[in-house]
Length: 69
Image 1: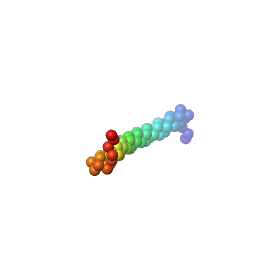
Image 2 (image 1 turned 90 degrees about the horizontal axis):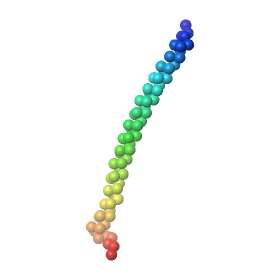
Image 3 (image 1 turned 135 degrees about the vertical axis):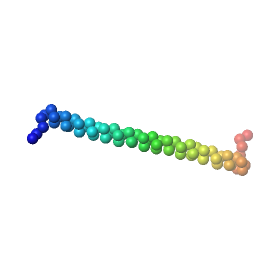
Image 4 (image 1 turned 135 degrees about the horizontal axis):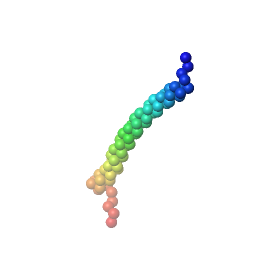
């Protein structure tokens, strides 16, 4: 027996609602993962910034660079 048209619309709306809920959950997971990646990248960037300054300090300590006059 075929459902009534009103019931058929309700069935499809419920299916759409379930799919939208899954999309929302997936998007929430993706946002969380991207946030973690951004935080990790920021940590790496700060380490690289410190690595850039270390050779300069080492060269100055070893008198390998001419000091500006």
